[in-house]
Amino acid sequence: MAILRMSEIRSMGREEREKKLSELRVELMKLKTQVRAKGTLENPKKIREIRKTIARILTVQKEEELKERGEGGRK
Image 1 (cartoon, rainbow, N blue to C red):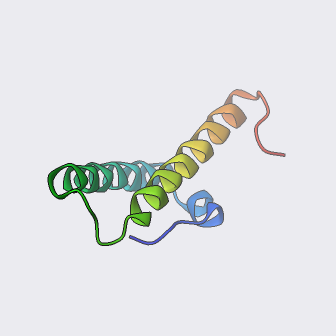
Image 2 (image 1 turned 90 degrees about the vertical axis):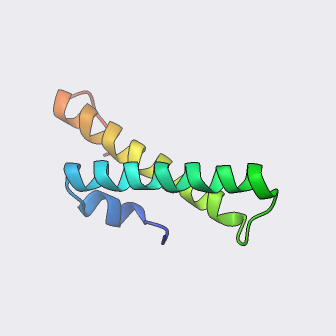
């Protein structure tokens, strides 16, 4: 799965972000299971990339939530 940039995430709709977030979490679980079972991965950097992408999505969601409430967010 490709790395999503912040601009790409911001351009997504809320439902699309939720769907992508659940897909990434499932993929992360699968990769972690592979590590526990086999001990190695083909591309160990992929776990880090997925974790960072999940964090980016959650950050954008939090920004939008704060913006809706009128408490600031990104300027």
